[in-house]
Amino acid sequence: MTVSETTAAVGPEAGAEALRPHAEDAFAGELKALEAADDRPRPARWRLSPWAVATYLQGGTLPDGTVITPKYVGPRRLVEVAVTTLATDRALLLLGVPGTAKTWVSEHLAAAVSGDSTLLVQGTAGTPEEAVRYGWNYAQLLAHGPSRDALVPSPLMRAMSEGMTARVEELTRIPADVQDSLITILSEKTLPVPELGQEVQAVRGFNLIATANDRDRGVNELSSALRRRFNTVVLPLPATPDAEVDIVSRRVDQIGRSLDLSAAPEGLTEIRRVVTVFRELRDGVTTDGRTKLKSPSGTLSTAEAISVVTNGLALAAHFGDGVLRPGDVAAGILGAVVRDPAADRVVWQEYLETVVRERDGWKDFYRACREVSA
Image (cartoon, rainbow, N blue to C red; front, side, top):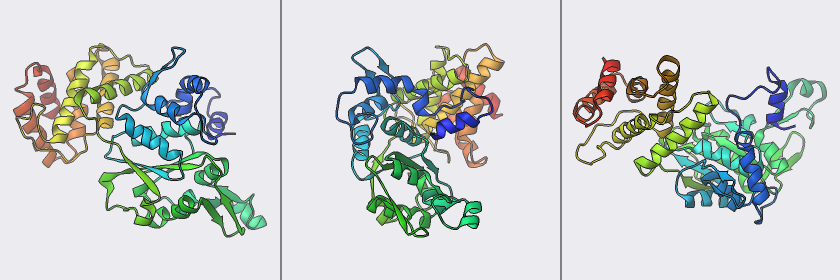
């Protein structure tokens, strides 16, 4: 029984609709259509060929007319390199600033390659070595001593045994000594269990996807020995405003449908404004390049823009007329920009008065922002 099946079986209501389905469940129809149409060679235990995995992530139309929606809007070559890495014996490290869809890409890669994205280790400052290697059922351990029945496999151990794709999120947040427990797994493709005098050998199909935030350098920097075990793919911020607007629009629409929020076409104007504000403050210069700006302390990522717009959509649906307006996104923008109450508020007020106030067609947006900033 998979983790997804186990969760469904013990959920509060059998058959209840998940708030946030796993990728392999949310896009099961697309994966099935790709699998049926895919006649290219597949690596051992892969659900799809590398070409089909890349198509699943970037979108396309199959010969039977099935439309595959894009999961990642970005350079196709990056996706091809990431997919190809998983077909080799090297692990994949997705690196980038917050909000560049590292986790999203990681989940969809695992879903397309293995059909299961749930073999996950979430990295935190308190992640123990057992989360990476294995733990013990202490009742069994005390009663019968070390045995396979008493051993509790980690997601990585399960992935090694079953030839699946495992995931490690926020690798640089994991303590350095726990990080280094990955070295033997990635280099020798084995996981020793000295208590039993045994080892678990990875079967064909096993690989690892890790994500790391490059703003976290210095938190738990990866050792050179561990870094050499990864092929690193840097996911960039969206290259153009139009690309970022497209990403935000797609994700807001997906999230809105799961929350029964209808995205009105008129909302595109506010989405473009949110993206423009975020990009200008993030880049430190206006879109036309004429005015230099101070940047706030926050990241102002694409993910935060999606959150601001989704929250605004909920406000419009529950406390407005259903149409996304400046007043619905103003408070969210303020919360995203002003993280440091002293320094960031000055940056925001200066931006409002020197840029937003003078911009044609932005008077309603300026008034809404001034109202929540007062």
